[in-house]
Length: 244
Image 1 (cartoon, rainbow, N blue to C red):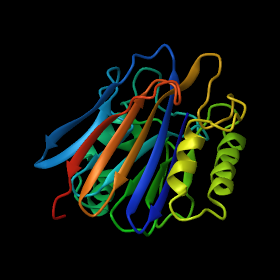
Image 2 (cartoon, one colour):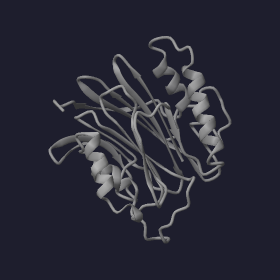
Image 3 (tube, rainbow, N blue to C red):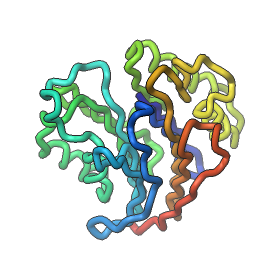
Image 4 (cartoon, one colour):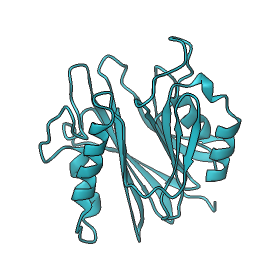
């Protein structure tokens, strides 16, 4: 249950990710910079599964993963591999082609359904891979600016969130897009919390918000732990972008 939105501009890419989880799940560790396979990476960590849901690296590759509630898991209970490990293993990819090659060679039947997006430094839209539990579908140059998943009304709620982002960015003046996306991810307009991008229900809720900015010179990761808007502090981490 998460929402990812993004906006390209002449300055680069701005990407927001709200992570929704059960409140019984352990709190994630904040983003840290690591050197993996010779590449500087930055990502938070899920202490339960050992993986992550979002990562960036010094080659300008950004990866984000959402659960895919439109399809039932075919993996027997307790036998699936954490989907977050995919993002962690791919975090050092220098190109989208490396991401694709890894997915094509991986035994995906071990994973429950997911949606994985990969962004590079080119403003041509991200690549999306959707694993249904049986098939892997790739979409290039994704035209949408929002991807969302929800265990509640898994078709309606994501569609509503996409609509909210489209309306927020409609007739948007230069320089306003980032602020409007930030307001949506904090639910500043007071949409019902059961379906809002910053959501709260009995049991699950939005437990963190991430903002990644990619420019020609660096990648900056800002991270808000807890429910968006309830914590005014954000940890900023910058990764110098390499020649890739």
